[in-house]
Image (tube, rainbow, N blue to C red; front, top):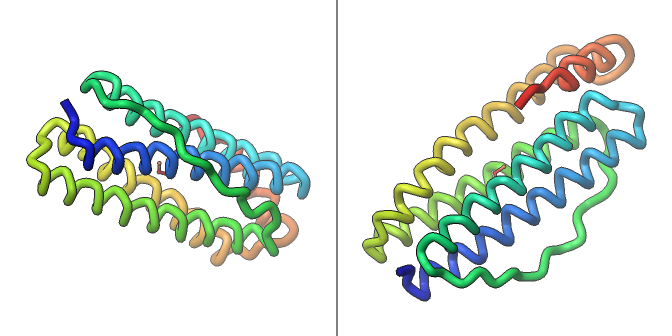
Length: 163
Ligand code: FEO
């Protein structure tokens, strides 16, 4: 059984994961509009991954007799000045999510909720991956430049994302 405090915090994080999904869908559609199909695919996969994160937390709530209550999500940003600006926003967003997950973990420790701690350990590891992936794209865009052939090649590479 989950405490009310943990349930509220998990509901908040479920909403945050769905908010993240919505942001990545907006980013993917922005890239579609700019004829960057590889970036759009990368971000569409990110959208799906965020939905999986929300489902994972929903599953944890359901398994432990928690009550999932969905909150309102905000309208996401829809335009970015450049691919580099967009991927910098991806990284900034993931850094924010990392802080949220860490706070949630601290709360689970305070509440002596061992099962939630174990569940959140997966998310802590996942955030390392999320920040690493965004940083790599930023570094490559910075290194290669974001016009002409380099952007075309990088976009193709992003389109090869398999998971
Ligand atoms: Fe659900 Fe991108 O972290």
